[in-house]
Length: 444
Ligand code: PLP
Image (tube, rainbow, N blue to C red; front, top):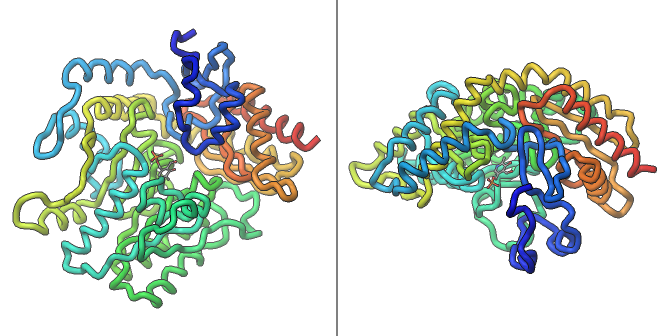
């Protein structure tokens, strides 16, 4: 057992846990994680918990990868830190070029951040700077989508479409609109992969153009598959339609690929799987396998050229973080991307996807299951809420699964699954078997 696996006396009070029920957790710390390896977490007592969620959709290569650990250790001994403002260190450039090799063609310029939230805000700022550099500084309006999640910075929170994440904070960014979410159409219930109906929902962008004028709109930002709000897979043709409308009106299309990047959908990025290339793409999570925080924003070469050539000299983009391109994160990212290649993680995801899909949909007849959706190695199982107690049913299921040794994730009454891409059939069976039992037990 790890010697620092048990919290120090009184340390529970000190840590304000993010997105958590602090009062509940601190009264019952049985969900403490001490160590991880391969497909599993281990509690301080040594109990194994099979990871059905790749942490928070991020440990795509599985846990405790020696290759990543060694790359970080090696880099720490060579160069712990150096600024990247008006200075450079080779490993950050290498990491950027390796990302550029994985992104869609012509999207070869990469800006580093430390998280998905920072990537979202950076992408929005790049869009605004791009239009300004083109002499279209009236384009300041940003468009997101209901039930979109783009992290917790003011940009991402404002463009995001989750009421609970916004309401606590009063004033948000001005000049923000939202497209309708793409979920809930009857024809799409229990769809496998991209659901058939709803491409027309992209046309609401035309309404916003009619209302405000295209000359005021800078960018549309969406997740290719909305993960955090319960695995909302875009209807077939929806993203293509959004792309066409953005092109028609000179609006930049941003894909938030923080979850869908790095193999989750069986391709390097969701853009490739879904056949639509955005102008700007955010990423984080799987970039370093979450071993060190790092995010990035990849942009089409023309977007970079416009911003960088938009000024005669001096700083072109007044934005950056102390840790942009941090050497240890860059080392982790390079090692992770090498693993993606050497182990063909996207290919592994593709190979097991049919089995995963069948396993997901085998839960259809379990009590209270009202919808199931999947794409790549993501699955969402929606439960009917307990009357008057939204979210309580899925939370109960989550606890039962954890107690039975499987980690799932819940959002509202939706159970979301996203195992590491190294998942094998027996793991899938155990995840689905445990979840099905938990759903049944909750209903009983
Ligand atoms: N964007 C998307 C699509 C996400 O799923 C997330 C996190 O789940 C974020 C942004 C925020 O990332 P972070 O928590 O690293 O700031």
